[in-house]
Length: 179
Image (tube, rainbow, N blue to C red; front, side):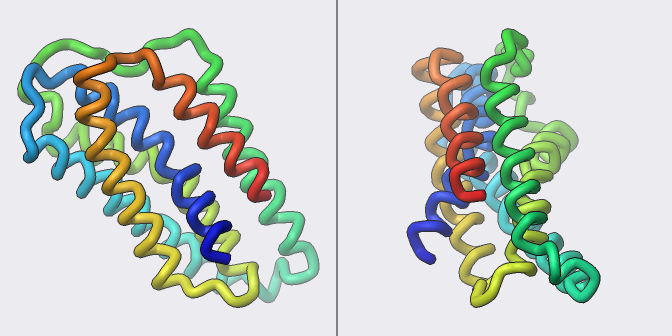
């Protein structure tokens, strides 16, 4: 179960990692505060959303118990396929202008929510699986995303957009395989 959880955590964090790389592009000189802010925003929301999803899934569990394994398969498959589709798109979603205000509250909130919607679906899946320790899962996902997002700021600042698509593709593939 720990290996599965690691795979899910890394897969979920790839969106946040890719966006953090974009944020790293928009910062002229990366400081530790930029890395911590990205880690807190993305890690916090990636940890919160599966918890919300878990409670939603638990609430409706009695209605979908007979098909729960298919629900988990479909949700993870859709999320993974969407991430792979985004990784293959030619669009530059960063808006990589150089400015110190690229990590303002409104923008970071929006990005954190957008990159953690898939974590909500994974939380619903957790509610349908036996023996999931939701506290450990949420903590693990949040910490992994925090670390990878903080690293993403630095990597984006150093390497630019070169690896964005590969990170999203890998994350999507991991989620599909987990399903």
